[in-house]
Amino acid sequence: MFSQQERALLDLPAFAALATLMPDGAPQLTVMWYRRDGYSLRMIAPADTRKARNLEHDPRVAVIVEEPGNSYHFVEIRGTVEIVHDDDAARAELERIAERYIGDRAKDYAAGLSADPRLLLVVHPEKTVYHPGGG
Amino acid sequence: MFSQQERALLDLPAFAALATLMPDGAPQLTVMWYRRDGYSLRMIAPADTRKARNLEHDPRVAVIVEEPGNSYHFVEIRGTVEIVHDDDAARAELERIAERYIGDRAKDYAAGLSADPRLLLVVHPEKTVYHPGGG
Image (cartoon, rainbow over all chains, first blue to last red; front, side, top):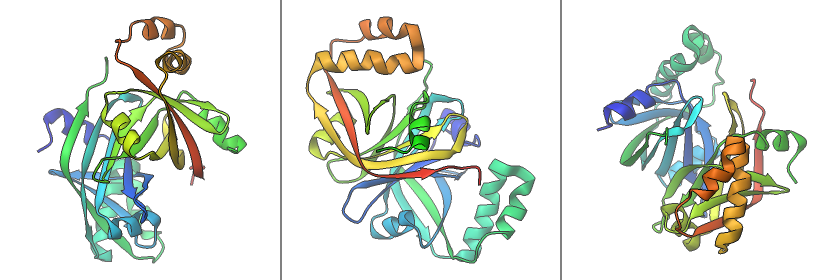
């Protein structure tokens, strides 16, 4: 379970830095939209991207979400990603995720995407560290 | 060399997300102050921290720096960290780094630190990807 403070932070329209592992084991980072769903984070990636190929090879990830405008307040999550190979489900989820960031424009955004298949990524935390900041 | 756009972004008082590798190879993330110095980024870490122990074990890192207030504009860097075991050099560098973020308070901040030894971390990029955002 996320704590109440963690949920409050994660439910802001903040961005996630997602660390995956390259085939040689080196770390790789991208900035992601996401949506919290219970004790998981949901993200979308085109299947033909570096991060998606990395996750197919090794599902271990780390995620940091910082409070917009206050990077001293952040939560770090280590865990694994479950990959859902369902383009329809991924697009439906992407529209929900996009609403967090662009509101009413999410439907048009989702409708305008390329046909490249999308993966639904479900981050399952194993360890969470909360940094309240303000120190 | 960083491009002019990359330098302009990196020289903002932005925060870096630093990905290191746990002993089992899983990724780990922290938020860091840094300072660009030519084609490197300088950071400081207490020697007795997870990230420092990770780097002693495996120097491969990834770094993301986002524009404050505009996470669509970011640069990702993959490379390796050179660890300088010189507490005096690390503290001198930390004061310079801190000036980027807290200005005149940097001297008091540096003077008030614990006696725990600090490491100077020099990130040497091998690959840099610039995301101009605004799409």
